Image (cartoon, rainbow, N blue to C red):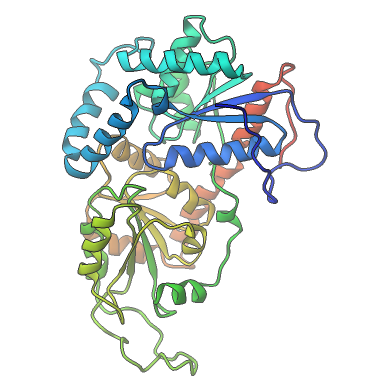
Length: 421
């Protein structure tokens, strides 16, 4: 592994001339789905744009004997086929009151810490930034034992900070909101700061007309697209969610298409729902095929099942709302796009705790059963006070200081603050 300077995007968060700080940042991520790696990649891009030398390492690659690959396979398999088992593991080891205290570490953490120590000796960073809970445990363990001579600043990617994120050996924590920051400080005794969500700039910048997106998807212009998120692995009970949305009565399509030839043709008034679920199945091809059978074939499908997409900014720009089940990166991207987020049937463990924490923070709405989705979506109609208030609270998260600005200040030898936009 070598240091790599990432190409600066044309859309950089930095304004005006700036002398690059003498900093080398090591970001420790995890290829568990795509969320942690997405945060790591965007954070690396921003730091590189500021002149910082950045390296990103996968914490699973630090495990010997391909144990990281086995661990990822086990987690994915359990989430797809036996989520109840993950719920038990989560309650026992992640949040149980009988779990070890914050400074105690598991054998897995010790092994990861040994691998991380080797990487640190080779690369000699001036700052270590874990963005995954096992990485946070490993860095905190090394720091508390005097085996990591540079600061460790944890970027918390969950709204709910379970105990595996928390280790008093870490120097600081960056958290998604003030409530999480207070909870982290109370648990670890370490300073915690609120930071703006780490999402690609394209989500806030895109204001694509719905017509072009609808046409690309093969949907009439009047259809109200509700994106249904299932993560990179296509996990959760999204089929139930999709059924609830596509059984919702006649679509609300304008009868007059202003002479575009679509108003009085086939499909108007068909019993396929006033919302059109567009399910993001990630890389779960089996889920995509199952949903495609449920929705039917064009013309006039009751919904769409999509595989992995690289055009999510455009899809969100055309969406009526996002229905999510995990409180992950897709929710932050919807916040940036000013799209209302409704959560339903969350995945167990950190997913359930995360969606409840987001709802408590007032940045999303949690619906306990799919039957309540339609009522909540109706309440969030464009122009309604409920929609305006919800998206405004979510957008206010971005008023916090950017994570890269905080990290650059912590990484600089003099501790001086940097001016950022």
